[in-house]
Every structure is written in C-alpha cells, then in structure tokens.
Length: 263
Length: 227
Ligand SMILES: NC(=O)c1ccc[n+]([C@@H]2O[C@H](COP(=O)([O-])OP(=O)(O)OC[C@H]3O[C@@H](n4cnc5c(N)ncnc54)[C@H](OP(=O)(O)O)[C@@H]3O)[C@@H](O)[C@H]2O)c1
Image 1 (tube, each protein chain N blue to C red):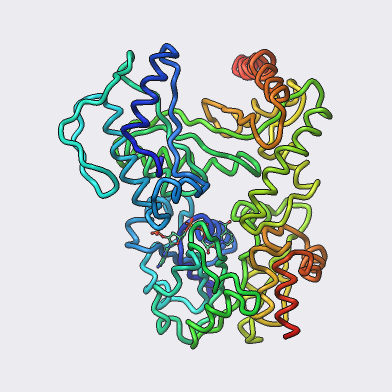
Image 2: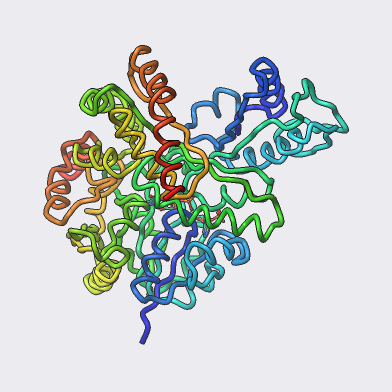
C-alpha cells in the first residue's frame, strides 16, 4: 500500500466486494519489492512514514464513516464520505507481516488482524510473533483477531510431478530474487528441507494436506493461504494447483483437523 | 562473572542475537534507534531478560558490542562511545534499505573496513553477517542442542585479541568460528558472494569462501587485489 493511495485502494476493494457478493479481502503490506516507489514518484527513504500514514488513513476508511485525516503523504481529508460503501459495512482487511516486530505492533495498534508471510524455514518460528501480537493487543486494548498465514506451494497428482514443477519455478524465482539481493543460490538440500519441514507446500494433495494441517496445528493459526503462482508455471499448472487445493487439499485438511479435535 | 554483550539495532537480527545470547547465559543489553520504551514490549515478549536501553547506555555498559542496524545508519552512532571496545559488525549492504551506494559495493574495500575507519579507536570484527536471522536461531546449538551438526560463522578482523574474543562469543552462541586472515577478507562474506546466506558446516563454509571468485563480485575482488 505504501505506493498506492488508500482512498483508491478502498474504492477499488469496496467495488470488488460488491461485485463478488462480499468476498473481497484486502491484504495490506509495506511492500517487499521496491519498483513501485520510483514508478509512482515516491522516495524509498520515506518507506516507513508512507506505510504508517497510509495505514492510519486506511483504518479510518474501514469504518465507512465520514473521514477526517491529515498527513504528509497525500492531501488531507475533511469530513469526507467515501463511496461505494460495502453491504456488510466492514471490508475485510489484514496486514501482511514478515519478521519485523514493529509491523506486528503497528497492526495491533490500528486494530487490524495479521497475516504471517512465511516464505522459508519452519513455520513454528513464527510462534513468538503471534504471542507478540496478542500481548500488543492486550496492552493497547485493541481487538485480538484470529491470525492467518501464507506460504508458497505447488500441488500436482504426484509428489514427483509437484517437485519438478516447484524446482524449476518456485526455486528459480527465489534464486532470482536472491541474486538481486546478493544471496547464494538455493541448494537441493535446502529446497528439499523446505518441502519436508519448511515452508514450501509441494506435493500430491495428501502430502500437502498433511503439511498444511501440521502447520495450522503447530502454530495455532486459524487461516492458511496458499501462494500458488510463483515463477514460470504454465496457466495449466497453476489451474491444477488451484483445482487440487480446492477439491482435495482443503477437505482433507478440514478432516485431519476435525479428527484431531475429536480425539 | 556473567558474560555481557551489547546489541545495537533491535530489529530482526538484533532480536535473534539477543535470544541466543540469553540462552548462552549472557547478560544482554539492546537498543533500537529511539527510546527503550519503544522496544520494551517486543523485548519482553521475544527476548525476555534482555535489557532495553539507549544505544549510548549499551555502549557505555559493554566491552563487546554487536552492530545490528542498517549499514547506512552506523554513522549516527557516536564513535567516541566505542573507544577501545570490540565491535562485532553484523551489518550488510542491502540496497533496498540503504539506498544505492557505490561505497558499500566496492570490491577494493569492504564495508567492515568503512566501519573500522569510522570507529577508529575500536576493534572491528566482522561476524554474524552471512547467515539469515531465522537460520541463526534454528542453527544455534545452544538454542537447539538436538541439532545434528554445528554450523560455522565466519569471523574477520585485524586485531588478534579482538578476533579471539569474538571467536569465543561465536562459540558460546552455538556456532563454529571460521577465522579469516583480515578485516579486508571480510569482503568475501558480503552480498554478491556465495557465502552470503551461508548456513553451512565449517568445511563447506571454507570451500564457499575459497571459491569466492565464482561470482562476478568475487572476480572484481580478485581483480582489485592484483592491481
Ligand atoms: N535480517 C537478517 O537476516 C540479517 C542477517 C545478517 C545481517 N543482517 C544485517 O543486520 C542489520 C540489521 O538488519 P535487520 O534485518 O535486523 O533490520 P531491521 O529489522 O530493519 O532492524 C534494524 C534495527 O536497527 C535500528 N536502528 C536504526 N538506526 C539506528 C540507530 N541509529 N541506532 C540504533 N539502532 C538503530 C532500528 O531501530 P528503529 O526501528 O527504532 O529504527 C531497528 O531496530 C543490517 O545491516 C543487515 O544487513 C541482517
């Protein structure tokens, strides 16, 4: 959101919400890529203030009441109504957070739920950040929402087929980002560790369902989002992931979690 | 006597090093850019026991201090406060945070050498820079004694005594120190070299360092040496 305009973001998502019968959800982020800053005339030096101000304004817009706001990153608003309104009166919005404690406390301060962006390593690493969110909401007296997470994945009929797609798409994309930042390329060992116990949900529907259920339980999150689009996958491969996720993985995850509750 | 460590920078890396230090039985003092109150909740939850204070106090109260703030910010610190101290430089050039800086990407002169130039009365030793913060926490054998192997952290400095002290800290923190011959050699641990991001055992880290010319930045370092 740092290089977008909060009012426009709200207008667009409220419109989407209307078209989709209330299914729009906004994930707000500071942005981990920087191209959009020069593209829209923002200075990367203002990274912090841009997000802070825009999140403050956006959290006011979410009330769907007349908004009065003043800051340094856009024109002030004085008792302005923003349209369209949503049918439910509450557009669903989350703040995406990585490993920065500041971001978590900020989300708690604005009374917004968080989505943990977990892109590598064991998901349990994020447990302390969940505790931080809970403690922060308690201290600030803001609502404590269920926490969600997102990670990358590829689903195919067999583990081998999914592995092959991920090796040439997800890994290559990660290496490309890494190269821009000076990281060494990912080893096969590392890649396999991510699949086995880390943050790549790659495999057959059953494999992926078991991994997701384990992550949900291990962390105690209430929501899991699969990022299915990494790298140079064909549209057919992406569709395959979406279809298997919806038809097979989600029901299996629900079943595993239900069984364990009954146990 | 309890060992002490000071950490300047209370972000992703600073917090992880505080957690490891506490686990290793150190008394940990930590500072962000602002007041201690700003980081007190974070510390209470993520690294309970670490003392939040100002960077001035951290420097005053500790002989061994880790710099875990953005590289472009070190000159905001008062170098006199670090006189005679061992300063572990864990900082890297990250252009998205630091902006485009040619001086931070110079194959002739490492960023730790720039830090040494600024803190000219301190002993700068490069350490804990090449491993990602999550990996540091997972791989520390102090935090996770059940790990099947001990990973290596490269240590580069010019003062033999300071290097020895830092190697001892690295060991206390649950890693094998791999000592390079000089602070200048720390260039081989910078972004753009295959060691950057390395989460390896000592022999493999050695190999990665020795093959630093595999990347174009490494070739530029080698070419600069010949001049
Ligand atoms: N992240 C990693 O995995 C990793 C691994 C190895 C090395 N490093 C290096 O470690 C350094 C920190 O990285 P990070 O990822 O931890 O960044 P980060 O999460 O953004 O944290 C940076 C910290 O430095 C503080 N800071 C900024 N200016 C300061 C000042 N003048 N005095 C005292 N504290 C100041 C910030 O405080 P405020 O929030 O109050 O501004 C913040 O607590 C960087 O040089 C990075 O290259 C990072």
